[in-house]
Structure formats: structure tokens, C-alpha cells
Image 1 (cartoon, rainbow, N blue to C red):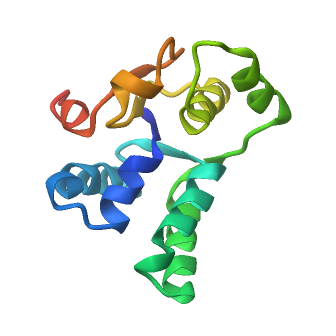
Image 2: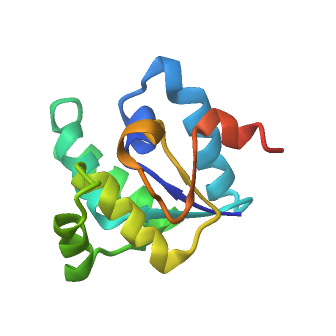
Length: 137
């Protein structure tokens, strides 16, 4: 399956969020083992790099970037993606809007996130939580 992984799922692992770590980590493992094709947006990498600055030194954060780039396909944002956010009155979260716009280019089966109710209104791709995705098996 082709899946786009939202920033909050990456942060579950990087920040070792106990409540969410196991499911998110399993999805990462499945992508690394090529069970699924994993996509991550470029802005997710910069967000994770910035957010993790208080917990990790620069070399550790660079290692995170290297891991993400080695095992996932990175989707880039375009000018039109930002303008789509500005022009869409239903979208209030830039990060989630960019996830949806980038997903249009990769055509994944799912966007995996824990923010389904708030940020992904009218998503062109099915939205699913990590736990629900793992239960599809």
C-alpha cells in the first residue's frame, strides 16, 4: 500500500510519545521493510527538525533527516499548494493542507494521522489513524 505519513506520526517516534509510539513505530518498520511505500512531505522534515531541537543535538537531528530521506519518498510542496491553502476558506491548518495537496501528486491509499477530525476536511485521500491502519490487516 502507498501511505503518506503525517508529521505527528513522525513526532510520535522522535519524541518517544509513549501512548502513540508502538503503532507509529510499526508503520515506520513496515515502510522500511518495504511492506508499504511510505511518503513524507518536505515540510514534515523541517518541522520535525525544528520541533526536536530541544531534545536532540544537531548531529542527532541530522541523523533523523538522513533516516527519513533514506527510507521514504519525499514529496515537495509547490507554489500552487500554498496558494490553494490561502484560497480555501475551509482550511485553517497550513501543515495539514500541504499534506493533502502533496498527497494529490503521489496518490497514496491513505494519509496516516492522528488529526483526522480537525485538519483534513475534504481530503482527496482517505484519512486513517495509525491504529486503524494496522488493524486493516
